[in-house]
Each structure stands twice: as structure tokens, then as C-alpha cells.
Image (cartoon, rainbow, N blue to C red; front, side, top):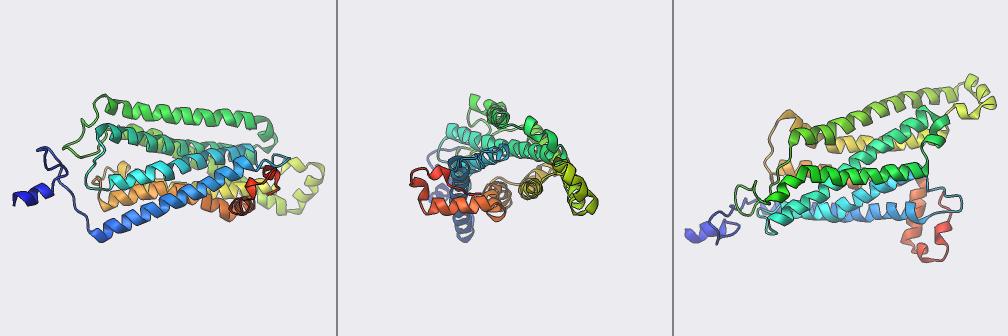
Length: 330
């Protein structure tokens, strides 16, 4: 009987050890295989996006636009989620944490930074589309490549600062919030994270895209009208270009998928419901949160012809050839 009780402990030699929370083996295998597969796909697809935007320069710098720079920043954050966050999430699904209290706290910095960067990038993308659709005449002067570079840099600096703000308390004494030895639990001010990490950015994104949607619909109707067609002969810049409307629709899908993946996790927090750490419900909510990082490049592949052309050149290893960065992909 004593041997059986020891086998149920994470660390049998320590009296304060946590007990192993056993999960059906079939369920554990499905979780591990699914997370491993999604992690691999997320890394590969986002790496293709990063190479496509950063490598293919082309003589007219067609891919080096402010919008694509924001997509590049988003792809980097999604790439880090697939490379670091998802594999460690597999370890967190284990009944016991064997890497120590300090590693537990340090690990949480990575998802905080990457997820915060993803949310801010979504806000910046919404602002970019808002200006492009609602104020097209001032888009080029306002949204310059250099200015967007600065905002992307500030986005990542803020993400790091945001993570330290929420986790610095845990670094003072790692493991202080564990109820037993072998747990990986941190303390986060849930109300502040809910407001700054979800409600405020999501409200901004929704408001901007509702405005973009209304203007885009009105512009599309104007394009089809004969009166507008006559006006376009004297002033082509009055109506938003068709490519801008298509870009707005594509990035609108990205934002919609982002909201569908993030809302369930935060809605549980907002409702005040409690979900046990390590439970199947908790695993699903976190998995859905991270799954957004895998879906973004899939959306690019469906809607962006230049991305599909870039992928073909990358897979064929034509990027290793001299002057491959000047290849036309548009």
C-alpha cells in the first residue's frame, strides 16, 4: 500500500510532493500527437511567411510595404509560439513539473511576450486598414515604411515590458504559489490582464473593422454605380483601389479568426467560471488560443497569390540561387 501511494507522488522522496493526476492514456496520446503536429505545422508555415516577405525584395520592393511589415511581425510572434510555447505546453499537460520553479516562471515569459505581440500586431493591422480604406488620400503620407518599423519595434518593447510587469512578482520567490512540490503555478492579476490583454485591444479592433466594413461596402457600391464611374475619370484617387478592398477583406478574415480563437479563453475568465489547470477543458481553451498562430499563414495561402508563388520558389530551393530575391512574385 505504501509503495502504491509513493507511485502516485511526483517526487516520492519529498513529503510535500504533488500527487499525479492521471489522465486516460488514449486522451493523453491524442493531446500529445495533436499539439506536436500543430506545433510543427505552425513553425513551418510561419517560417515560409517570414522568408516570403523578408527575402523576396523584387526591384520595385513590392512586398516591402507597411502592411506586409506588420504581417511579418505577426508571423514572427506566431513562429515563436510554435517553436517554444506549444512544446512547453506539452510539458505543462504532464501531471508533474520536473524542471524546477525558476524554469516554470521563466517559461511563462515566452507566451506572455508572443501572445501580447500578436494582439498588438492585430491592433496595428486594424489601424493600417482603417487608414487605407477610410482615409486613402492620406494613407501614404501617414503610414510610411519607416514609421511602421518604429511601431513594430515599440510593439515588441511593450510586450516585453508587459510580461515583466505581470511576472516580476513571481521571480522574487519562484514557486511561492505552488500548493505542493511539482506544480508550475504563477500568480497573474486576472482583472488587469483581462482589460489590457483582451477587452481594450479587442474593442479597438472591432470598432475599427466595423468602420472599415461600412466604408468598404459603400465604396464597393460606388464602384459599381455609373455616376461614380464618371467621377473616377476626373479623380481616380477618390475611390479606394480594388486591391485595398481585397486586402481589407483578407485581413478582416485574419482578425475574425483571431477573435474566435481568443474569445473562448477570456470569456471563461470574464464569466468568473473556474477551469482546473491541466483539465481537458483547460487544455482545449489554451490549445485554441495557440491554434490561431497556425491558422494565420493558412489564410495567407488562401487569399494571397504572392504567398503561394513564394512558397513554390522556397520549396523548390530556388531561393538559394543568385539574385533570387529579385524574383517577381506579384
